[in-house]
Structures are given as structure tokens and as C-alpha cells.
Amino acid sequence: MGVRIRLRIVSVSGAEVITSALVRTGFEAKTPQLLIPRTLAEKLRLWPPPHNSIPIEVRLLGVSTRGHIVPKALDVYVLTSDRVVGPVKCDAVVSESGGEVLISDYLAEELKIAILAPKTGLWRFVDEDRVRVSEAPQHWL
Picture 1 (tube, rainbow, N blue to C red):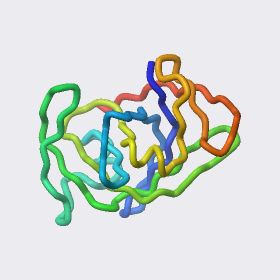
Picture 2 (cartoon, one colour):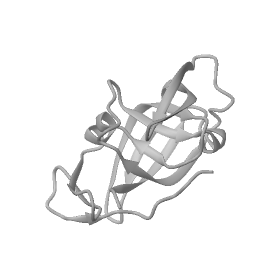
Picture 3 (cartoon, helix red, strand yellow):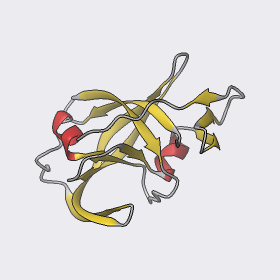
Picture 4 (spheres, one colour):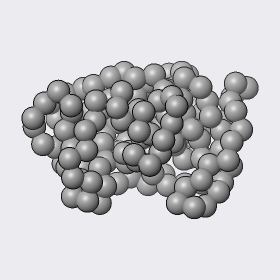
């Protein structure tokens, strides 16, 4: 199942989207990063890639695809029924293929997300005892 969190994503252009995102501890990053499919990048007005984007190769589950990093392009908030955490400024990693939004290890830590049971989708914020359940997956195709 995995741990999926409901996010509010606001781009530097002012466009905003609410979506679920999968926390991927295997998505190791040196800065807070959120991987978003191109279809979502279009809604956030980050596609076509802006002039400050950096072309990269994105590897997802062993498959390579082209992408772009847009530095410090997003403000990300975690939304729950009783709390809002954020904003955290992060890089947008735009993948040219569809799929889910992925939260990097660095961004998860900045958002104070603690994974309790990855298979059953249980998590909490690091400053609380309340156990929370995952959101449903949302695919951007």
C-alpha cells in the first residue's frame, strides 16, 4: 500500500493543486524535492519547462525517462483533518511520464512525516502520538 499523504502544492506561478503523494524513502535527495508527472506540472504552470529548469534523467522503478528540475518552484503543505503543516519550499522534479506524485526523503523529513507501518500505510507527524492512515492513490496520466 505505502504511505500516501494529502498535499496542497502551490507553484511560483501561483497555480495550486491538492493531491495525494507517495512518501518514497528510496527517493533520496540533497534538497527537498517533489517528483511530479508532466500532466500535473502543466496544471502548476511548470510545463513547458521554465528557463531556469535543469534537464535530468529520472529513474523510476528501473525505468529511465527524461525530466527537469525546477529549483525552489513549489510550496508544499500537508493537509489532514485537524492540521496543516508547511509550507516547505522545494524543487519540482518533473517527470515526462505519468504516475503518482512522490515525496523525497528530505521533503518528508521537512514536513515532519514519520512512517510507522509502510505496508499498511500508517504514519504520524513526529511531534504527535496520533496514528494516521494513508490517503487513496491519485494518478496523473
